[in-house]
Image (cartoon, rainbow, N blue to C red; front, top):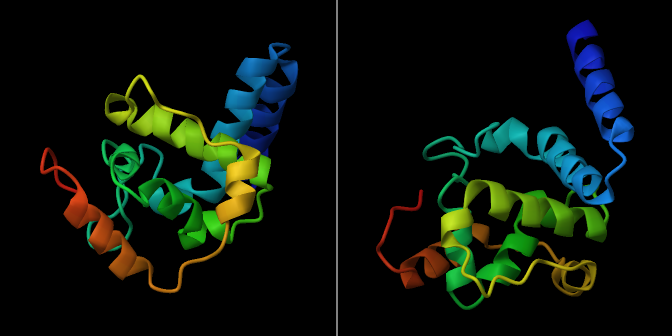
Length: 144
């Protein structure tokens, strides 16, 4: 418990000591990833085979198929998180830019608060929707 307190205190000091708004926004998104996503998807986005999907070198592939962008907003961890729509947009953009930059084209459009608000509804059939999207993806790498 003491380690967690020291870790969070250090993170907060780093966040609030940074005067650059862009860097602070990125740090805030990273902190939200650590607090809300890392427990399942792990620090490096590797996930857990057959349990938690990998983000690393995979999440960007969803933007390459119709419906994939919306899917990333509607997965339970995103749609049901305690984060605001603006924070969700920041975290999704951070995840994509950090774990899947090679899969983002030059035409990548970052998520916006409005887009998150428009599509933030939980999916009931996550596994089947995910399987349909993965089946549409080019076979350039494997998705768990």
